[in-house]
Structures are given as C-alpha cells and as structure tokens.
Image 1 (cartoon, helix red, strand yellow):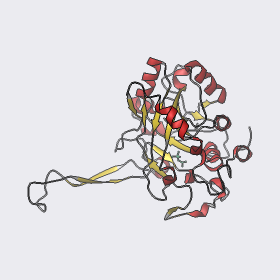
Image 2 (image 1 turned 45 degrees about the vertical axis):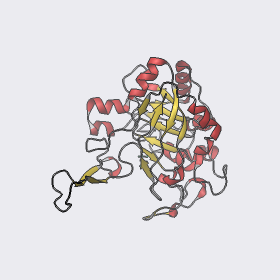
Image 3 (image 1 turned 90 degrees about the vertical axis):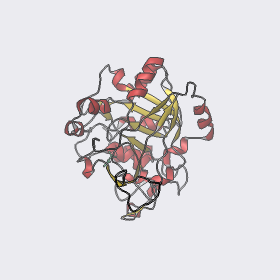
Image 4 (image 1 turned 90 degrees about the horizontal axis):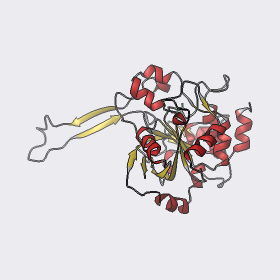
Length: 306
Ligand code: UVW
C-alpha cells in the first residue's frame, strides 16, 4: 500500500488554482455545472440531509466533542421584565461546530506543519484559522449531487466496522445505479451507518469504528474531479483504517493535499429510498456552511432536490 505522504504528493492540488487559493476542489464547481444541476429539479421533492441537532445525537465522547446543548433564555413562562402584549422566546446553543451534520473546513487537518496549498499550520491560532477556514466556502457548496448507495449495492442494511469501500466498488455501484459521476459533483456515499445509529440508538457501538472509503478512493475522487464528498458516518473513511501507523490518512490526503471539503454525519435514508424507487441517483444539492469567521467547520442541513 502506498504511503499516505507519497499518495498525497501525487494527488496534490497545491498551486492548481493559484498560490492564494483557499477553496480547493470546490473550484471544480463551475457556473455551467450549477445551471445543469438546476435542471435536475423536476418534481420539487426536497430531502433534508441533516441529522437532528440535540442531546440524543451521536457525538458525546467522539474526539472530545459533545452533543448540542440548547438553553432557552426567554421562555413562554415568565417575562415580567417585558411588559405589554408582545412577548418573545430566545435561545442559545452551545456545541462544537463538528457536533452533528457538518462540513470539515480544509484547515481542519494538517500534517508536517502544513495545511492545504502549503499554508503554515501555525496560521491556526486560538483566534481561528487565517487560511482555509469554512467561510471560504460561503458561496457553496451547491451543484450536482450524486448518491452512491454502497449499502444497497452490497445488499445490507448497513456495512460493518472497518468495511472498506474500494474504487472498483464505487464504479460498480455507479454502473448498477445507471449514474455517471462528473467533474464538479458533490458525491454522497451511503454506508448505512446513520441507519445503524437510528435503529440501535447505541452511541458507544456507533463510535467504535465505522465503514467508509479507503486510501485508494482518494485517487478515484481526484480522477473524477469531485468537488466535495459526504458520508453518513463520522469521518468519511473506514475506521480502523488500512494502516495501524497513522489515524485518518484519508483525511490527511483529501483535506490537506487535495483541498477537499468533507461532509460528515449526513442522513441519506429518505433520499436513498426515493432513489431506489425512481432509479434517479442525481439531484440538485445545496449545502452552504454558516460563515463562522475563521472556523474549522460548520453545522449544516443540506438539501437534495429532485
Ligand atoms: C477529525 O478528523 C478529528 O474529526 P472528523 O471525523 O469530524 O473530521
């Protein structure tokens, strides 16, 4: 197996869109691709791909993260300090930006002291990321979405911990579904892992590991000029991965070397059912991040529209 550094060097997009580029592979999304994607809206069916943001989420304990905590500061119970007819309710949320459905900003991962495009890792300080933060993706991420339903392709409800998706399997799944992957696509890979969480409601089991892509898929994503990749698991890649020396090697290659924004913990269940029913695995996708300045990620509730 090729070392992740060698692979990263081979697939590197550093300099491809200029020395100052902070957007990475979302540069593949052209205005023409967005116009073509809009034509995929034929029925007006909308699928929200975000999971609920609340105390019952999957995250407690993962990477030191917690589930979102909601505090209602102005309630329907007592507003004596606010006389008159008008009353209102207000709230605060306390959560890691990576708590539930999320984009990983390109700056989320670095190694050997460098981020994507060679920016120094120390450009990330307690005040945030000076480079490659999630606000750089503010005009996106939108365009043609394609679902590859690997769990259905394998004829399982969900794949198992450590199950690794190969490039050949991505091709076979696309062929079986009758869909072609194109430059600028936002790719959605379904492993069934979110369904496992919904059915079993067992956070510890869910966080023990996961099915996902392996390092060989990085080359496939690069060759197909994929703009962003989303998954229904916590880290896109299979855990445990294929090397016991490094954790999250796919993260290192995709984010740091290729500049690919990753979507994690998405819910493809309703969309996948619909795709299986009508045989259409392409759709208009719209998943803008919240423009938290200098942030390393953003919660999202992306929409797939057919
Ligand atoms: C890490 O890479 C630490 O987390 P995530 O899987 O959320 O990207």
